[in-house]
Image (tube, rainbow, N blue to C red; front, top):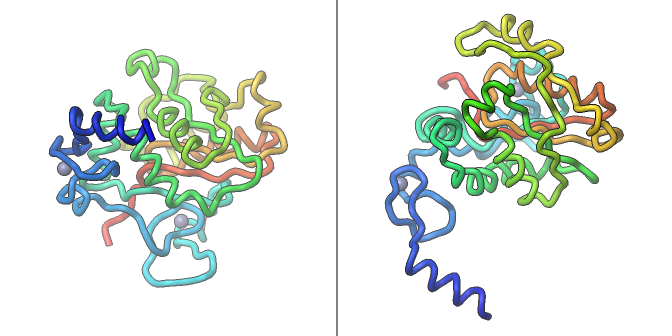
Length: 242
Ligand SMILES: [Zn+2]
Ligand SMILES: [Zn+2]
């Protein structure tokens, strides 16, 4: 009974703050009521492969048009948020704002969507930053998310299983084809981590899913290293305006 009492005392001394506006919040869920309402959480029917929200209701796995036309190499994918408004803001705060405190609540939002993808003996692996960018930014936001998500889901985590083999220029603003071309063979499983991947289902974690080029390259790398199958979990999913 000591811990809850201590937590209550700590809460009185350090009350929870909203991740976005800094206002006081009553719960541990990270956002105040106003910011919560303005955050595009993904719920309901989504594409089974890329996690994009779909209209309607279904008990079967459904797919969006993009995934039907060009199926990604991974089996299933889910996102916690749509990448707009506060969804975008949270990603940028985590990525550029040194806001590591976002990782824990973000992982709980991701876990709500990711749980149906869980497999026995699954292992979580983040998309790596390029070394040069890692040096500049000092931390990999995807590894912060994958560590917290693995903890939340109770699965193993290998933060450095994937590595980049060469520098890829910023992909911002590039076409889908240009992104895929730039990333082909850019990632691989580190030789010393291959035995951790071989024969196991892998959950690849990233902050944003845009064209899927990076996640495709990461998936191919895991499959090449012998992963039995690959699913993906991202904090936010870029979605066309409805
Ligand atoms: Zn707020
Ligand atoms: Zn899709």
